[in-house]
View 1 (cartoon, helix red, strand yellow):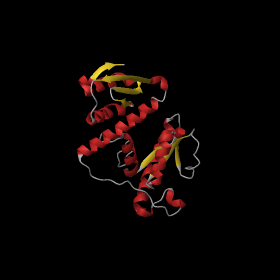
View 2 (cartoon, one colour):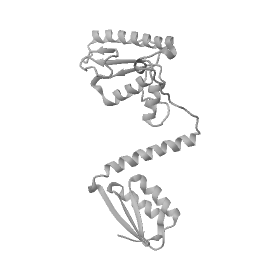
View 3 (cartoon, helix red, strand yellow):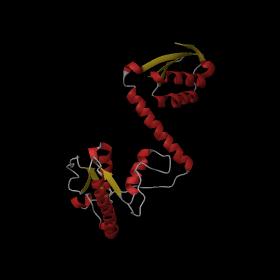
View 4 (cartoon, rainbow, N blue to C red):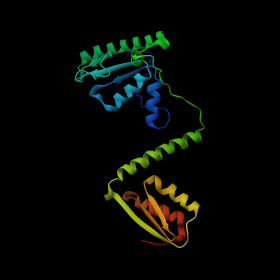
Amino acid sequence: MNVNSTPKLVSESEDIGMIHKSIVENIFSNEIVVCDVSGKNANVMFELGIRLTFEKPTVIIKDDHTDYSFDTSPLKHIEYPRDLRHNKIELFINELKTAIIKTYARSIEEGENYKIFIKHFGPFKIPSIDSKNVEFEEFVLEELRELKNLQKNKIISESNNTSSISTFGFYLNDAISNEEKNNLINNISFLGWQFDLSSDNFLFLEGPKNFEQIIYKNVKSILGKKIRHIK
């Protein structure tokens, strides 16, 4: 298109962090965003809402079969043919190129006075994303925590079907120490499993059936010779 810029998807990132973070950060930080609302995909409409909230340069496009949405209908939409006919696509490319150049130029020229959506409704304070420097180890740990929480929530959601629940228990030769209890919590809770020690010599476990073998191995590894019998 001969525009002095490098296009990329908002989901693209040079790091290996959470994809949702990359999307929001790119939506916020990219100098201009082209948003295709064809088909009114829920994720795309949500991302467009985020971008408009930041009051940053945005160009909206859609195919000629998609109706306008009520909230964004006042904003200009550049249409392209759904059948991608060559002659009309060429016209669309030229119109899109012009819109990108003019929209970005206007945002630079107007600076803090630039407005596209929110500011038309009143003197609102436009949000921003705070950033901070963190050590690499801290970043990795935080990402792992988020992955763990996402996995746990997914497992809990899937295990709401009682037919997928498994239960079993261990008879114990000796009482379980606090350190062993903490190890159990760390090694089974993130898979959606729970344990009960209401009896001094019996450990009862319950959780999603598809992780039963993993839980069994984890418990054996933690408690070792304290396991006397499996019920």
